[in-house]
Image 1 (cartoon, rainbow, N blue to C red):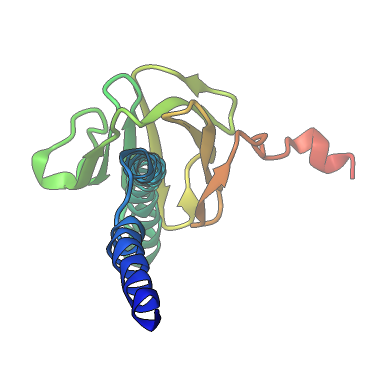
Image 2 (image 1 turned 180 degrees about the vertical axis):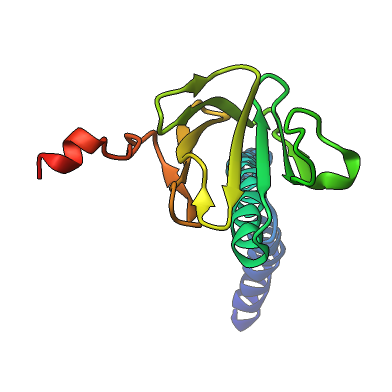
Amino acid sequence: MPTCSAPTANRTHAKTGPATRSRTGAFTLVELIVVLSMLALFVMVAQANLFGILRRSTFKAQVQGFVSAMQMAASAAAETGRRYEVIVDVTEQTYLLRRISSSNLVEVLDEEIVVDGYFGDGCRVAYVEFDDGTFANEGRAKFRAGHSGWQYGGKIVFRDESEQAHTVAVGRLTPIVQLLQGNPELMRPRTKEQVASF
């Protein structure tokens, strides 16, 4: 009789051992599809975020290049005493910085150009407004800098890919050119009457 119990134990172990090992070590097709779907979803979300970051950084890089040109004009004019001009072409979506070397302010000579650039699809100039009340939403707008500062202050309003407004503000008497979020009100110089009323 003792010989009967031993084969039963061996039989039970032989049946459950290999079957249990193969079930715990494998994925079913449904589990594999769920895991791959979740992985694809994570990749799509990461890709969308990356493209958003790249678009924002491209916009900031283009606007920062323009701001640098404006700051270069103001500081070079203050240091050298020469006149510089930044021309923003709203129609062509370009800009250039030139050192004025002749009395002819209309024609830009090749040797006068210090920096030129263009704005891309995700960074476009909507309009330019000067502190004397003039406004340009097409054609050229010119900011001239001399030893004592900018001839006129103003703002250049940009639109990014999502049509959000960003403003580059230019102060008349300061060399500070700054990028601001939104479309703030333009600071205008006081008239003689406003100054006298204080």
